[in-house]
Image (cartoon, rainbow, N blue to C red; front, side):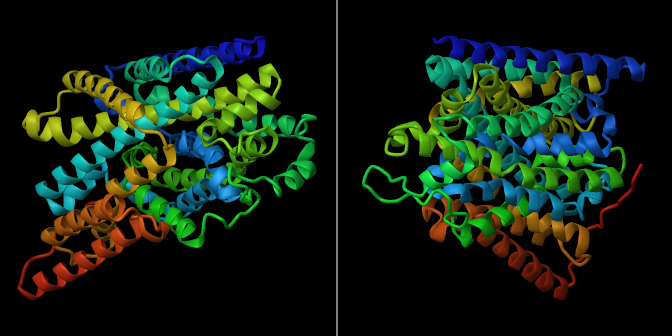
Length: 494
């Protein structure tokens, strides 16, 4: 390795070590302050104590992972700067979901399946828990891909070896400290992701080989692929309106049903903190979106032969950083990506553990009995399992954004209609809720795997439409037959 590669790698490893230390210290301090034995709620939900700023940072960090960093930079080659819509849409999603964010805290639940079960019963509970856990396994794998790709690009180490090391670090960091550990470290992560990457981007673009924004944009106009076709790298619409609308719809459905997001809302100290935190996270996400896109643009525009060699595209962010940033700045940028992926992977692991303990172990294995000592142990075992399955996904998958979009659609398309109706439709029936979840999930799977995502339209849109049609139609039919509505949710804010 060159001196620059060594410096960047040392900074990344120091950052990873610092993440573990910050998380562990925070967790120990919170336990000491509480002056009591740690409960499973403390371990997995930080004792429901997050204020709006920490909550916003945790939401942003949980959503800003590999797809929102390395994935965007990679997709600049096929979508131009319009690849940034993937994260701009997330900002829009956080703002829109802020209006229902208080309901998560008021529901006095810990997981999406719990909220679903309160109104629709056991069958809906089990089905939603299963699809959500499978989706989080996939999401964990995508974050491992992103981190491993960075280290692989710098060092030349085998991707497989790197993925194993990354998985081990994330598991250690997550299972020892729990959600309080992750929330504390996320404050540091957000600074690196937003401020660190933004400053680094300006330094990189002023490298003589890039020549400033004007020269970068002018050069980008003429970049072609291996066949001589212009790549239109500056386009903000190349991804297409159906894809942009699909992104927005995807986030609007996945944020209210994605465990790593819902768990954060439920961990707020009150409903106002949940709403304000969501608004802050939305503004932060939308503002940050263009940063990884510009870094990717430098790779495709200013590195000779990069645009024409598709095998290099997945390394766009790391390649541009190593090419145009000074050693220390390169380490900071790549540490920011590692921060993003570690925080997202940790959120996915904790979400998986929370759902398993609350929606599988306690109600069906432990016969409804709450046992904090046993549940914390079970949670840690599930985190290890989630990491190992995620590693398997990482070793067999490649396109981060494709994995994440499939994961989002499969876990959210069915439960979204049922969740919204559980809050605002008093005449919804239990069977209607269950059937809408099943049909919505089935349509999403068919749209992705059988039809190959027609028109580039995200599966969340057709699946959610079908789910809403089913839930209203079945509720109306059963209502006319005298079937009583499902019991209403009991909402409190304490």
